[in-house]
Length: 263
Image (cartoon, helix red, strand yellow):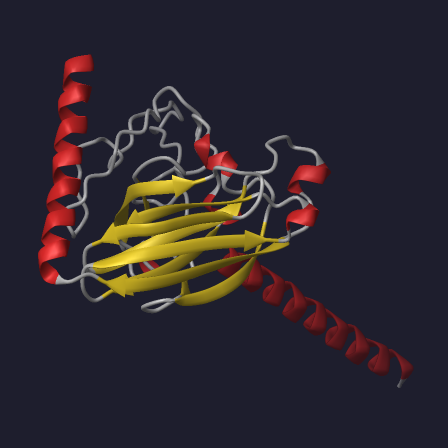
């Protein structure tokens, strides 16, 4: 009788342990994929952030998308947009964020079969990315910029200062999307604001996290700190919207000419 009872307890214990491990693995997987905080047409949301998450995306080898927070919002017509980010600065978050046009696919993440972080051939030699080549476009026509995967070991695919892409797994829809860099804010060691920024109708991504430190010590990679992103929009009358949009295009054309001349 005692042996039977012990066996039953052992089986029950193993079942409980297996369930706990499964839950932990599931939580880890969910946390490692893009899950947007939806701000709708304007609103506020708070997430736990790392002190180094955003600044890591400014490195040559880019940053780990698992260490940043994703927010999305939409504007139904041309608008002037205000974006503010606040954080527990007494804990040293140093809030920073980047604004992009477009949205990643749900549950997208670094290093998928379609868009590998550091692709290799059958002999494990580094090779060029099959999609991050400056030519391939996503379903919405956005071009994925060149990543020199043949020569650089990338930490991740998050680019705080440029356009970038990621994909989801086949089991999560197999969606590959490019989000287009618009601007970023990392001007101070405190809260950040982007005020009166003109945006045409569309969907937008904000990637936010900390910019306080870049070392690998526990003080930098250590505890999560709350950061809050707030978005408000003010529709622009059509004539003014056309003027602002035209001014923006002219600015982009001027930038392209200067870049071509510099090359």
